[in-house]
Image (cartoon, rainbow over all chains, first blue to last red; front, side, top):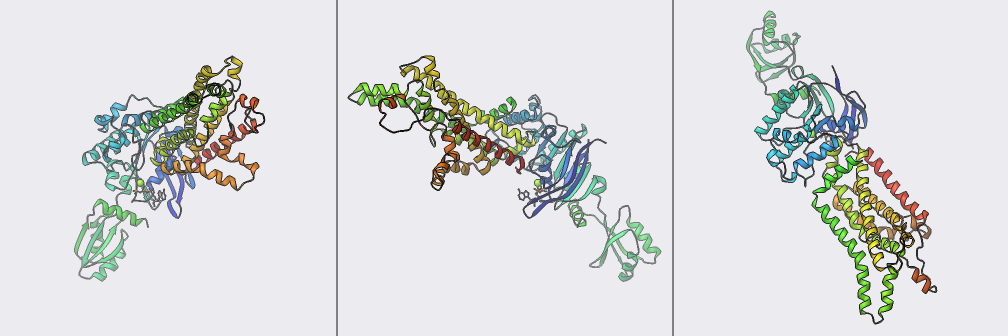
Length: 298
Length: 273
Ligand SMILES: Nc1ncnc2c1ncn2[C@@H]1O[C@H](COP(=O)(O)OP(=O)(O)OP(=O)(O)O)[C@@H](O)[C@H]1O
Ligand SMILES: [Mg+2]
């Protein structure tokens, strides 16, 4: 597969704070890559380094299998943190500056502005925009000149529900055209809906990376109870498919390894002569799963 | 080159503050240049002996001295050219305060290109200023100078490139302050304060060192006006007036232009934006 981006052991310190700590990543062509992590985990720092806004202390990266330069950045459309434009200029004037920097024609402005729903206000000054409109202009500016790669840092920040749905559909549509997209978010749900691959960041370190289907499936938890809780515990420890056995009130909880089903546990316990009085799956919300995922990386 | 200028042009073309300040600068420049002969006329009309004062006007605006006199007045330290420097300081520090430098860089401008764009921009401002001084000098000279032959007109024309060098260097200095300070208000204040600070520093330094201080260097290429009349008529008065542009003075000023540019280059190259 064609490699679009390779990151090698990036480290960045802000004084005492280590924002990035030996971060590695590979992104292939046509992938929608999610950078997932809680606030302050280093997502924006990573993207800033990739766009030459911030200089790393150590490590390197390559765009399009070339050493990074401003030429490679012209092939990338990006939004970073919050929208930054010349406040005294209109959307169109701001976009002209960007198109000139990227050496791209102005021809696609109308289409882009309609796409992000900003066409009616295109000639108003940026400073008169609402937060959501500013965010829409940021996305519009990233689309100028039909770039090969899109970098979106929290793209749905500040948008209303309609705006969020629009942007998500837009991202999915652009992805279907075969573009590569790198999306930073602290919302698991957003990453799950839009991304094919994900890297989970915490305190500047990569916890996991891989296809969304593999990384974001967190082991499920079961609750068990039996007349003899002590024997249940001892027997369960002998079973290879569970981890983290704990006593929680009147139940025992345990986490299932990947591919292990509750009935497998039941069968094993029965074969060892333990009869369960209670067996239940705990369904967790996505956010709980995310928190657990982060805990797992400790 | 042209691409970068077009980008800078898009940034200022509908920036009201820029045009207001530029308008103010041009107004001041014209007022000073054209106010001077009007002032002399005024003196002449109120003096009993009209003849002498009428003569003064043609002496100050005599070719070729007029180039030196007009360039000296337009380029005096802390005078009208400060407005041009304030425009530049606001223009560059805004890029840092508003964070728009990030938008420039992440979309594919290199950090070096960012610097080149700003240098081109201040080059054009300095050129515009020089051009106005040239046109005004030509107009005033042709109207007031007793001699208007070509060799007289071109006589001290080297004071124009010298004026350009002083203004250009001063505007690069403004770029440097705006970049290092970043906050628009503070950088304007520092630019103004420095006019007072440098003479204070100068007090503690030996005389021979004075001309190497930045502001002195940027105002030392043209350091006085002149008129051939004064020297002929009053040889007993011992005022030293500048006769020509010294390569040494121009060299010191130019060195500062290079030094400021080099600092800007390495600073922008390394810094987180
Ligand atoms: N300019 C800066 N100066 C000092 N510390 C900084 C700076 N920028 C970021 N940091 C620190 O670096 C760490 C990573 O920040 P970063 O902005 O990359 O996080 P993030 O993952 O984008 O978070 P969020 O979800 O809130 O956007 C944080 O601890 C932050 O405080
Ligand atoms: Mg962030």
